[in-house]
Image 1 (cartoon, rainbow, N blue to C red):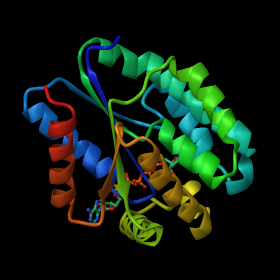
Image 2: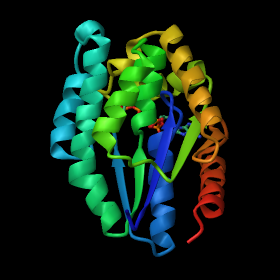
Image 3: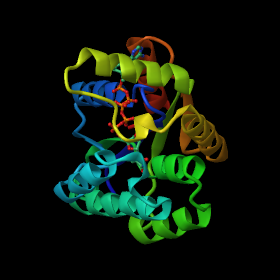
Image 4: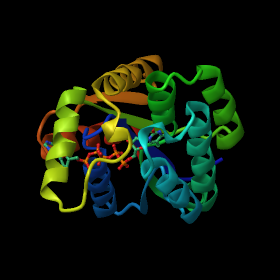
Length: 214
Ligand code: T5A
């Protein structure tokens, strides 16, 4: 159905997804490929508006099911406005988080039933699945420490709503991402995210070359 390739990066807080999405997009572009880098929640005007609702409010702002639906509403907008047009134009889309994040955060983390995720995914995605999902694996204590260190360095950049949800929540998410990777090994690759940025980037590029040969 699509001419391009769809690569997603997943993992807990501070795993290095944004850093690696940037490095991967740059490496693919340097190899002469047309690349679009995007993120969730967000990646289109409508989805960015929903992102502000999700990240900027108090921890208890949303009922878990409503929150799950908001993530899928944002995703539907993102797909329609950004991802599908890029794939149809033959681009390599590198996306920082996608539907696996909703499964990990809202289902494993917040206790939303899996059947709700299944139903919303069927409605919102029209069968689109990533060609490759790189799951960056790091102990939540270590990932959160990276995020807190960054917040301490950047004036006005305090932790967002999810980052303040407590260690037990982030441990459930960590286990959730591992379960997702184990359940779909043909699509997902679990990668050690504790190495240097360069080491993780090299592992990712190797995986992309092996799994998505041009
Ligand atoms: N969410 C999202 C849901 O609950 N459900 C959903 O369906 C979706 C899509 C998004 C939040 O929304 C939640 C999950 C999130 O909590 P966000 O601001 O986009 O919020 O947050 P994250 O995606 O988690 O992004 P972060 O920036 O917090 O983490 P990243 O992208 O994993 O990490 P990155 O690359 O920004 O790096 C963090 C810090 O670590 C350093 C970086 O320099 C940076 O300071 N770093 C490293 N340090 C040492 N070694 C390395 N290898 C490093 N790599 C990066």
